Image (tube, rainbow, N blue to C red; front, side, top):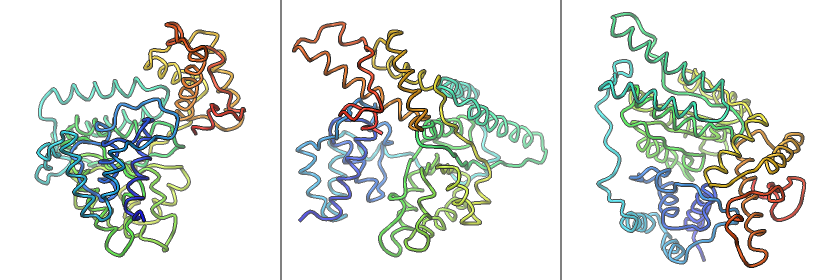
Length: 397
């Protein structure tokens, strides 16, 4: 009988492959899944390990060698052994582990080490500007940069300073750019000299909540240790307290608040989720209210912005989208908007994945794939959200 630990790790590995649209669950997904399940320190950030994202639309299949490794993960000790083996197989030596955080220092005293750091700020802001839409979000992030620069100059001049915190609340629906902007904010904090590393550690409720007394605090501590020097991003953070007193969510929040205070000079925490549940979450603990005083709202994308995202994703795949096809894309987005099924980039990613699948079927229908069929998206390749076929976008939402 398969142990619960094996099932949990398998589910996490499959979820990672799905999140990155990979066609199979390989060693890199397994090592990431074990690290998340056991709260182990993964030397390489999971984004670097798993990227780039693919275009797979079918359920990912587990590679045979991965299945064999999975079956050995019957206990935490055995799973950790498999984890160490995978690091060697993936050529990720432990010596490449994240650098230790620098000695404790006041955030307000942290300054860029050179002018190159200041130039990096502009480079990172250029990445922010390249994102489609998000006008108010971009202005809010630029306001954060100005606030920290201004505060630093006042301190240099011997004037009182507010010493603004680094923690943020991101509110908005899924697929509105919160995780992407969180990564940019992490790099901005590093470029400004506010954090030594500027990496992002993304976690969800299962990464923080344990199954027995004392397990939760240990999990939170391990996650915070991985994030030290950078940003801890907790998506759907309200899920930590959604079950009230029936689980260890309150223990996770209390432990997080304590560690945020202990590591305030080397850790930023960004919590994200739907607006109303996040309001309730922040009010659930006085320590959260005092530490999360800055909020950035992420509005749904407009129809024009969703079209821009579609065109950008098509360019990444080197696909040509003639005007006749764009007309079809606009029609699909409009219909989805009318039924409240859009407003987020995830819808568009699913749409282009469905289009890619239909394009492949069309090109292969006669058994001969011609050159022009590899690149040009035709109107009939764009799925209709109202249909019930296997290639409808709703299948991938």
